[in-house]
Length: 210
Image (cartoon, rainbow, N blue to C red; front, top):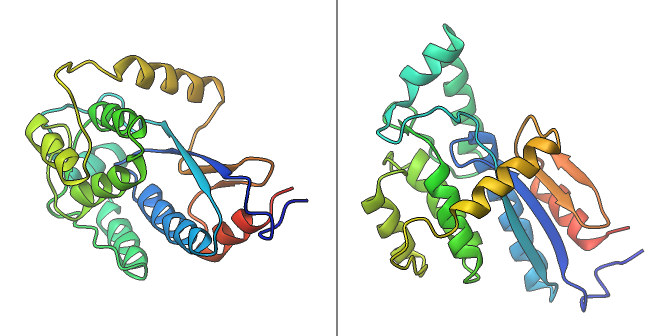
């Protein structure tokens, strides 16, 4: 067993998520806080993101999120989004379902690939979530993505396809792995969590791996 006293070995955590998933946002926020605490204790965490698409057919042009949810799930959506927003508020998150723009996340995932190559993926993931749920902007818009990349210090280069093949390969791996819900947090030599867990659960998994 490896405990927090052995800080020389980085804890690798693979995270499968989608930027338009509220539970991914909540879960990642709690994980990020746990990772920050673990790093403050002297530990190291290596985070690897894996793409997932809740709605592969979503248009990059975007549409009102509530309209998309009502079309897919029917009545009762507003009550559910109100419940989820209230749940997220306990973590200090603002989910603006009234104004959020539903869109494909392919380009967002591509930018996460670019950010990962520069050691900035954790920062960009948080910023993408906030842009989608709180700022209510279209995270498929090239201008929006360029701004978010600039804010987090991610260089995007001139090739608009860079990272796209990695995203496609990642989606295929996740599909073959039969992942049907996100978020998923896989702690190397440790537990696997599906769904948003508590900050303390993530911290305990980082401190002790089997």
